[in-house]
Amino acid sequence: MSDIVILRIGHRPQRDKRVTTHVALAARALGAKGIYVDTKDTVLEENIRSVVGRFGGDFFIETGVKWRKVVDDHDGTVVHLTMYGQRIDEALDKIPREGRMTLIVGAEKVPPEIYERADFNVSVGNQPHSEIAAAAIFLDRFTEGKTLYENRGGKMSVVPNERGKTVVDLS
Ligand code: SAM
Image (spheres, rainbow, N blue to C red):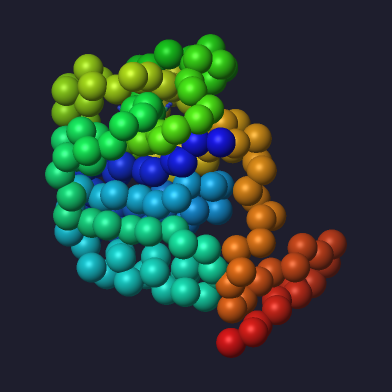
């Protein structure tokens, strides 16, 4: 399975704080290794590291990065999620399963160079919706949900339950 990292473009710390937090948390839960965010946001970094500290795993976050550098410094496949892209059901079979994947999600308008640079511009339906939904659906289909209940070795873990809440707290 590919090592998947998210590249979040156009993050505006005040306006997008919850949405970018949720992109990161959904990506972590669905098997991504980490997230790069183009705008520096130390609060966002602290929030995500706090979740990782409690619930485990080694998901990373780095903010204030240049998108070109992230894309150019890493080998592998670049997938850009956009409502204008090719259909996800047609793209999935063509996207390599091994090596690294950089999965780009936008906030405000994405620079046109991204569409050119991406190996795959992929849509999750042809309606505008949400970067959280687009990333989650793409990752779930790409990984076939394999990481959803994976043991992250965290201080806290949630035990699936038909009713009620079971949380193991080793801290
Ligand atoms: N016009 C934008 C677009 O290109 O998809 C919608 C902007 S939306 C507020 C922010 C981000 O959500 C987009 O950059 C894209 O990554 C993701 N997104 C929204 N709708 C999508 C869809 N139908 N398919 C794939 N990604 C989508």
